[in-house]
Structure formats: structure tokens, C-alpha cells
Amino acid sequence: MREPLVTDRLILRDIAEADAPLLFDLDSDPEVMRYIGPRPASDAAGYRDRTRTVYLPQQAHPWHGVRIVLERARGEFLGWVFVRPAPGAKSARELGWTRPDEVEVGYRYRRSAWGRGIATEAATPLVQIALADPATTAVVACALAGNAASLRVLEKLGLVRVAEVMLPDTSEPTVKLARRKSRE
Ligand SMILES: CC(C)(COP(=O)(O)OP(=O)(O)OC[C@H]1O[C@@H](n2cnc3c(N)ncnc32)[C@H](O)[C@@H]1OP(=O)(O)O)[C@@H](O)C(=O)NCCC(=O)NCCS
Image (tube, rainbow, N blue to C red):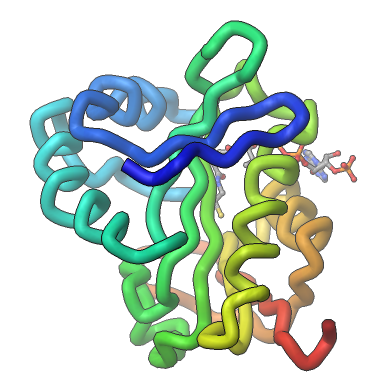
């Protein structure tokens, strides 16, 4: 496992197979999944499989991958944040994310964690690390147009809206955002 990242209030550590029940519980809240869609697996075992086959291999890279976000004070699980090459996204083709030098940022938090700046605080060092890597040309993200809180987080991270696309199986447009290195 790589060294955890530490911020004022948070610890960001590499995801592990044992986190599967936390991921499953998080995705069991319909409010959390409101702008995301059906959860990727129907039980914790499915999340464990996905962690082993998809998330753990990402940790071979110095900074790609999913980090579990814990509150420093009590070690409480709050959610997760990732940075990874944009072509790895589920809808990468439809979003036009074909370039591995573009890095996607994403996150998901328990409802009890919302509204305290947690998502922004956790993603900030990862966006900085991604942009500091000469191999990165941009940090990108997407969110449904109605997901105002997520869009605001992305704007606070320095991303700007670049386009809207209508993805299959969605009833509203998806907003694409990017922070290009040339802006630094
Ligand atoms: C979206 C999410 C990550 C935000 O997490 P958070 O820790 O509350 O985010 P932050 O507190 O860092 O920032 C939220 C910002 O959105 C604003 N906001 C929250 N709800 C809002 C709303 N309904 N309309 C407009 N702005 C809103 C907040 O005021 C804050 O902005 P500010 O700092 O300028 O006041 C969290 O709600 C979540 O996990 N949702 C479920 C999963 C999800 O949707 N993930 C993103 C998929 S694209």
C-alpha cells in the first residue's frame, strides 16, 4: 500500500478488498446514488471482486486509483475519491475521453459528510499531484447537469465547463469539465 495522504481533517488511504462492505453500504443510499444510477454490484462480494480486479491494479501507479476518505479525528469512513486516466471511465467513449494523459477525478460521500467541504478538501491534493506530473495534460470530470453540489465541487477544484452531452440511459445532460495545464 502507498503512504496515505493527509489533509487538515482527512486521511486518504488506498482502497483495500476489506473495504467492500463500506462501498456497498455507501451505494445503498438512494440519495447518494441519485445522480449516478444503479449500483455496480448487488452485494458486497461484487464490490470485493471489483476492488481486486480493477482498483488494486491501479495502485501500481504512483498516484492513480481510489482512495478511501476517513475523518482524521475519529477514523470514521466518509467516502472515496479517485484520479485515473480518463479512458478508464465507464462512458469514456461517449464522453470523448480517449487520451490517457487526461486524468479523471471523481468522488462519492455518505450523506452525513455532505456540506462540510469534505469533497473539495479530499480532491484538492490529488488534483495538484495529477497536474504536477509532466505526463498529465488535463484533469477532467463529468456530472449530471442537475448535480449542482458536484458541479460546484469541480468548479472549486479549478475545472471549467467545456460541453454537455446526452449519454445513453440518462434523462438529463451530462456536463463535461476540464482543468487544462495551460491555465497554470
Ligand atoms: C457531490 C458531493 C460529492 C459533494 O460533497 P460535499 O463534501 O458536500 O462538497 P463540498 O462541501 O466540498 O462542496 C459542495 C459545494 O456545493 C454547494 N452545494 C451543495 N448543494 C448545492 C445545491 N443543491 N445547489 C447548489 N450548490 C450546492 C455547497 O454550498 C458547496 O459550495 P460552496 O463551498 O461554494 O458553498 C456529495 O454530495 C456526494 O457525495 N453526493 C453523492 C455522490 C455524487 O453525486 N458524486 C458525484 C458524482 S458526479
